[in-house]
Length: 119
Image (cartoon, rainbow, N blue to C red; front, side, top):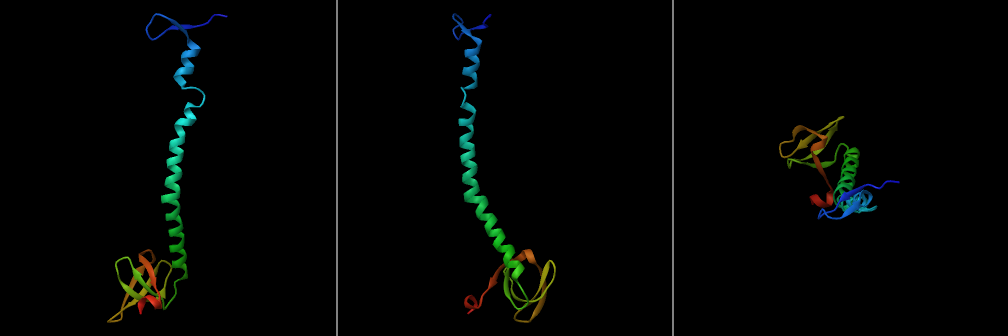
């Protein structure tokens, strides 16, 4: 069988092409070892950023589903009011001191005010 040769770095010695291909690919585990830092970084981002945000979002959606008439809430704009009516995608609030009635979308609700926090 005829073996293929290429010129070496200095151009003086002959090196088999198969040896050059193995060196160029970095060996058998070069690709896997190169991906390990990326996998590690993705795992850190998942556990430190993505997963906590998903659990926070689930708690917020569960809180929105349990709101009913009479609950006191705070909106993202800082408006404090009492829910007087619940619609599909919004709430009607009574806002003191003039008992002003406003409609607020559900996505604007930030927190529910409990009796212990308001006193």
